Amino acid sequence: MGLTIALEGNIGAGKTTFLSYLKKKGWRCVDEPVVQWQGAEGGENLLSMFYADPKRWAFTFQTFAFISRSQAALGTLRHPPNMAPPASQPSASQLTSQATVLERSLHSDKHCFAKNCHMTGLMKDAEWGVYENYHSWIMNEHPELRCDVIVYLRTDPQRCLEHIRKRGRKEEETITLSYLQELHQRHEEWLSPPQHGPGGGASLSTDQVKVLTLTCESDWENDLARCEEMCEAISDFIEMIPAT
Ligand code: TTP
Ligand code: MG
Image 1: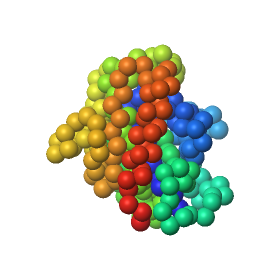
Image 2: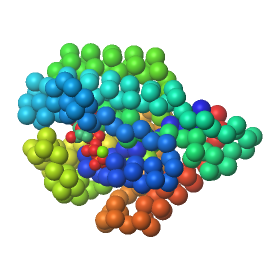
Image 3: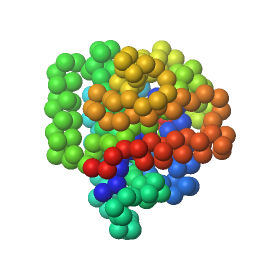
Image 4: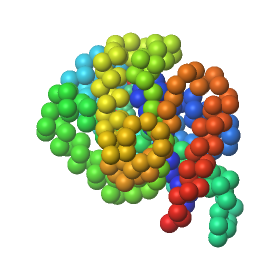
């Protein structure tokens, strides 16, 4: 099986936009099931309920988010398209064609969002305990959901807020800069621990996943050359990972 790569970054960092670019380049990608959270496939709009009354719905939403993500990721990881037989020294292009890129992962569901809900009192200790129990059970039952690599789109929270306002997802109208700063902080603590220093380069997350940080400044979404550069940085990074 190929490498599993999680594309991480704050709300509005541009993960979906970059994923669309990777798809066009032929990478196998798994979308985040956000439409399911919005009730598009039947059921309630839990995303909207969460933002309208976070204290009431944080636990329910966070639980649904990681379960629906697990279902979406397992669907693709279990049915990979036909691949060429591996050579003894796979080339970079083979590595990328065998890789699966996920928009976010079970890792960030917990380390960023659920943890932030617990830290800010939106999830009580008892709810956090139940959440952690379900989460580690799913991770242990499905080790294929653990990622090999995290690509962290490190983006200034103010820029994220501008993206969120521009795309205008109705549910997200109440998102504030301070909420994005909190989430930025959770991503930083998890993916840029002080011993590695902030900014670019490679590090290890608390789950011992290899992390490539891509600092996103300027209007990179409309800059094809920058997208290509980011894509090449990922290919180069995974080429350096020893085969297991
Ligand atoms: P993101 O997963 O950050 O996706 P995005 O589409 O907003 O980011 P990008 O622009 O980079 O593609 O969040 C989707 C929405 O779901 C957002 O409103 C935050 C919310 N959310 C939670 O509240 N808790 C969670 O655990 C997750 C994963 C998302
Ligand atoms: Mg997205």
